[in-house]
Length: 219
Image (tube, rainbow, N blue to C red; front, side):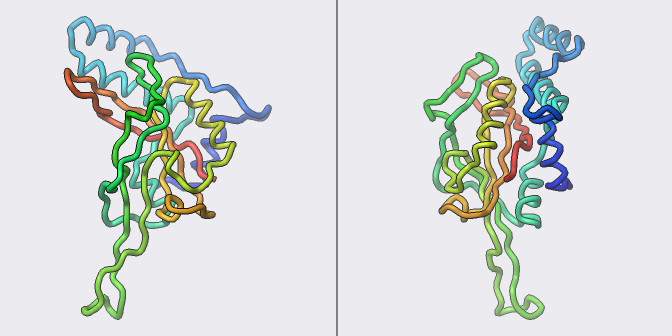
């Protein structure tokens, strides 16, 4: 389990040094990665190649100092305890920015999107948790798209997002926040992550495929 304070301090070092802000530089992969990609391409193993590109980009993010974090870990870091259930929200949300690394294309037309994920914790109340005491919802938080958050995103966090976009390493950005921060302006501080997708393109459909999230900020 990650410690939120340590993750924040480690991520700050990705963007800052003794001299102040520093430019993000994506590391050049070792030759073995390039040899594998070429072999898969020559042998028409497209799904294998796509998966390897995903692994490579995750490796580059980690080499830069970003910390990969699962959604369940994010929830526990933010809410202080694990969730007991998760489900898709009713309303769809659209991405304000998506990057297709296969075609080097940026999409800002909000055609990409989907339903956010809601995490909640259910607990029993009452003496010894016996009937007639029923299960009650203790809290809910939502993992969704940035522009739907009612809590104002600080300028410094926006600058970090801009720097990440310049690297062309990440495909999209997400935010995890308690439901109150999605409904009104609160003082609750969300967690923002930069996401890497496998981006699988089939004949008639395109999916994100494998997904990895990297901690970006919590203010």
